[in-house]
Length: 458
Image (cartoon, rainbow, N blue to C red; front, side):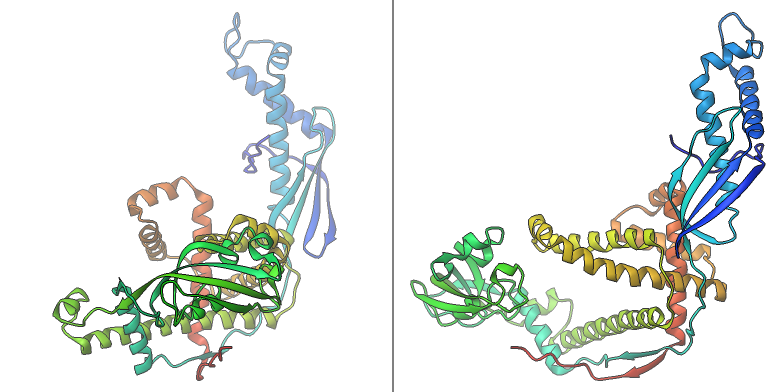
């Protein structure tokens, strides 16, 4: 039965008892008991309502005998009676609770019948009381945002590389050239293709293209490095030492010998930086192009700093105060974290089978991240209340425009959808408040500029 927990104003149930039991620090069972007299009175009112509205052949509206109305509409009367009793129990026991209810996790309606006492039990998760930690002057670190000449040159090379041509060449492959090749991996006499059948890229490829010497390859590094210096028709063997923490675990810590055959080499030919090229980039010359690239790099670094500040603030808040977090909140947040993770990785070609293999470790990691993320939201919500942060009309307008741009939707159409979906509007309101609260904490934070830590490769 779908339960509308907004009880009609005309109903009032005198409860004989409200019993609250602690299940754990964040979960309670609230039992609301209505007297048999009240339930009977509500049933009598319902029957009167049905009598006035019922259309029964042979009787004028409101004149049908009560026993006939009871018999003909017994199921509807019983359903409406239960809904009213449960709704009022919710109003008195849940909405009227002295503690802050996060959500209802279970509802036991019991038996609701005229002439009998009725007990409704709500199992709820609650938000525990906690002291808001100090949040002004939180220390955060940033890295310099200036773009170095080396960074600009590297980005310019990437821009040129995106417009490069790859011409068939009768020569050995240099770094950056593309090579059509085939390869097969073995551990002793065992084919890797049989050991990891769901990941053919790690086992056997009859015909594929690889960028020779690509340092950011998603494939087997030993193969792409081994292609440097090979020409069409050449064969060689290379060894790939997979790290101990490699996924899938079947290859972790193993040495795989790959037999490679080069079939064709395509030389990477960079475009000439002439007037036509600069015009296509909407600049007048190389100097202006480098300036534009430098500005883009600096903007990216500023955004990374802003994201990093918020992450550091979140971590500081989570560490600053200890309190139990509602289970249902962590569970729903875990599902959201996993869903986002899977969507990102599936877009990069990770198979559903691969997720299934590692579902336990993935869930464990997502649960930890979800716990901290949810806990930080509870803290931010308390800070927002303390700072009296409100949602203004312009806040909604900005969020609607942003969402419309991201989804490619007409803003007016989106507004009409939101008018029909109060749950979505409430979520937007919560997101706006949390965002404004985080902006406030970032504004009050104490910043220190530190040089970025260089990551040394193998």
